Amino acid sequence: MNIPSAEYFEVFLDKIYHCKKPFEVKVRDRMPKTRMGSYSPSFYRINIYSKWIVACPLEEIAIHEYAHHIHWTEHEGHRRNGDDRMHGKNFWRIYSALMSRATRLGLYHDYLIEDIVEEYRIPYGNL
Image (cartoon, rainbow, N blue to C red; front, side, top):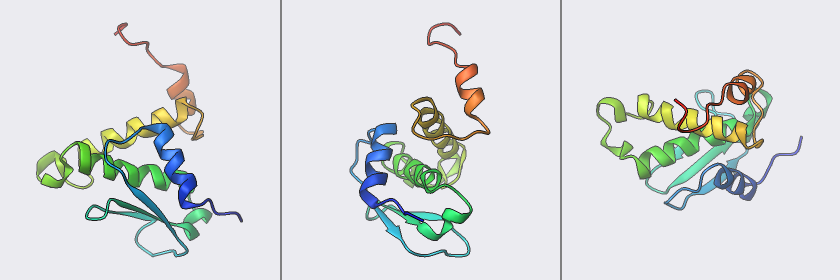
């Protein structure tokens, strides 16, 4: 099975959303029991554990960790209180927006939500 490179994921994520703060991706040949990826805020590093490819698309893991980076660097997720905790509602809003955008751009295909994202898109201003 071909595992994409760190550069692939950096370009992939940048196409979804160009973050204001640079980040790096490391693809690690591991399968920790408790996580598919991780985000290291002190280094602005996204870690993707490639052996999880058997259970989940690595692009989905990358998007999840990228949401942590955006939450941390652009939305003051480092405050860690109330709605800004690591997996609080603000994080999930960012993650959902990234997944929706990746689907609309044709960069990621999640067959569970793809029809919802495409079929029910409301043009801005027509709410």
